[in-house]
Structure formats: structure tokens, C-alpha cells
Length: 181
Length: 147
Image 1 (cartoon, each protein chain N blue to C red):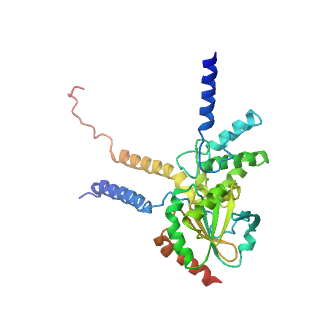
Image 2: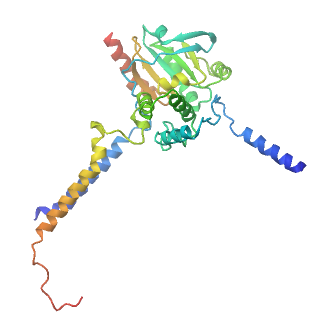
């Protein structure tokens, strides 16, 4: 048999491999989530008021020293409500400080939301205008960042946290940064 | 005359009642441009940037709240005297390469930029080989056939 006869078959398999790899690469449910360029970069400095006491401001430097989880949420955000029980369960383990980043929200609405569903956060900072959020590359709530003791962003998740994501991504990331120290 | 006034009032009411969101959107007012050149530059730039929330729209077209904020940010950076390249760099540093509709030419995007050209060359090579294989004079000698 002439080798030329195999050519169409070879082309077919090459195409099949190409298409199958496309399907394989899009298997993740949150494939639309943008990979953050800030991973392993120092977290952007900020100075934002505390939701429960607007006269007090918190800066990034004050939060350094221990790792923390920064969870972006808003009372207008439907997915945050779905995420809330998961986040509450995680926060109750006291594994790491969970800080709420109240994004583009009316403080009164945010406080009412926390009262209604219970407050899982160690501290909530409020970014009403959403200017500081641009520095963090935040584009939709909920988003969650893991920042290490030195203030470097080590992990980010876009979309609601689930128990599976906490177990398979967040916990290993936490263990990694704790091993380094 | 009176009915006209009522109609006008109704129209105005409609205009003011449209943007009702629970979210804080103090910045939902249309952007105010200083002059035509600024406006043209802004629109050209915003059309080249992708909205990070609704990824099939440009920053200029999107109604997502983050797109609103980013439009304000872009305009502000323009007024601070940043070049288009600097503004793109600002957004790429925070949101990643994804915000650029036209990816930059660098090692990781060579395949993307040069891939079609490589495929074209391969195709041309195949055509050349096939034509060379056809030895001249193999045309049917059946001269009596009518075309």
C-alpha cells in the first residue's frame, strides 16, 4: 500500500487530537475565570474603612504578620449568599483569618446582610467606590484571595467557594505558605 | 399644549427611573469629555479592551458595573497624561493579558500570530510537491474527444 493513502487518516487523527485537547482544556467548570497576574506578587496596598466602624481605617501593613483570606462580597451578590454557609464553616475552623471585602455596596445594606445571615468575617473592610478593587484586579463578587504573612498573594479563586475547592486548592495552598515560614 | 407637557414629564420620569440597582453606582453617569479628540481617543482605546466580566464584549460596549468603573479609570489615566500603551499595561498588570483584544507579540503568542502563516506555507509546500509529481505529457492522448 502506498504511504500516501495513509495521509487522510493521519490528518483526521491530527484534527481529532486537536479538537479533543480543546475539549479537555475547557473541562473546568469555571473556565471563564481569568487567571490573576497578581499571584506570587505583593498584594496592592490599601487603606479602607472598617464596615462596622467607618472612623477606623485598615491598611495592608496592619494585616501582615499572619496569612489571611480576603473574600470579596456584596449584599447585592446572589452567589455570595450561596457561598456564605461554606465560608462560615471554613471560618469557624479558625484555620486562618477571614477578612470580608465589601465591594460596591451600601454600608447599611451590607450590615443588614451580615445581621440576617450571620457574620463569618474576622473583620470587614468597605470599598464603596470600588477604586481600590481595581488594584486587586477584582471584577466580580465573590472572589477570594489568599495572602501570606509577608503580604504576597498566593492563591485566588473567582466564583463561590465550595467545600471541594477549599479541600483541593485552598488547604494545600495554605500548607505550602506555612511550610515556607 | 398641556398634554405635551404631561408627555414630556412622563418621558423624563422614565429616563430617571431606568437605572435601579441595589449596587452602589454613583459613577453610572455618562462620561464627560473635554473635547472631541479626547472622546475619539477614549472610544478607540475602549474598543480595544475587553470587558473582564462579560468576556465577549469590549469595554466600550459593556454595561457591567466593573466595565463602568474601568471606563472611568481609563479616562482618568488618560487625563493624567498616560499613553495608550501605559494604560494597557496598567490593566494587564491587574487583570492579565486577557483584557487586550489584540494579543501582544511575545514568545508565548508566537504560535498564535505565526500559526496561520506556517499552515499556509505547509499547504503551499504540499501543492508544490503534488504538481511536481505530475510528470508532463501524462495528459490523455485521446485527441478525438470533443470538449
